[in-house]
Length: 378
Image (cartoon, rainbow, N blue to C red; front, top):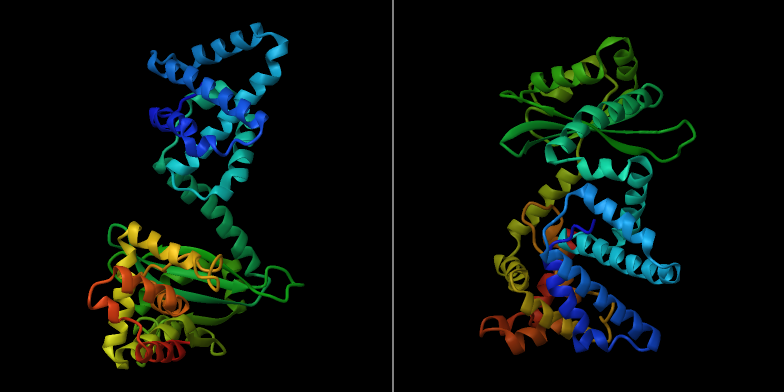
């Protein structure tokens, strides 16, 4: 019944017996509960060393134990089960690097499964990544796509187009739509309509044919086509062409009123790249070097966090350094802004822990130039 990894018992028992954890139990009731949990873990740890029974034997054994337990111990048993359940749930979140605030939804999901399926069936079920992928593509995708396509028949809408490469070097077209979900809405909503595989060709003609086939074929497709009022995309030649061969040029031939815009995110990214290229490279490198000091070192990150906690102006407001991700558009700007927020703790860190070059970081002139760079990026 309790299919938990040995790692769980190996470390949890030692932690509960440690002085650090013992000191958290203040009242007699808390100490009694801690002793109860330790006794419970010892029992379970011993049971883990025995041979593992099959699922049906586990269920039958648990039912027999519950049937003969004295009623006076029912409350204690419930407490044991509750503590053990919480530990198992916490262990799952920790082992899978999941956020702790997912616990409530995880519990609700488990309760839903128990209400929907017999326990012996759940023990015999299997599910893997291929099952999830199949359910997503064959069940959820067509249902959601049909829902959004129906909404596009009743609302003016625009689409955004962007090509990319997925795992396995597969080229695809990312297709989003922005529209009003109801006639009373004053704010638009944006939804993903699909990822269109491009095979060997990604010319403007190919994109035009694939989008038309997906969205604008048949009588319902013609209704949607009349509601299309705009397209946003990057400036690549297969999207916007001076020779009228891009996908947007072809749609404008069908719909002369169509508004075509160069996607603002792409424009902003191009502006930032041009700005950084013209800025003195010394300060761009400084930002990347400062961030890299902490990206691969938990020890240095911990020291910086301690210095931040000791700073009354930044305590409980800023946790630590941002991580630089080259392919994320705003990552450099985020890192630069965080460095300027942590000038004093960073100065102290490099003064105490840095090498001769790092100890010269963030002088007055450096700070002035970094603030100028941030202003240009903003």
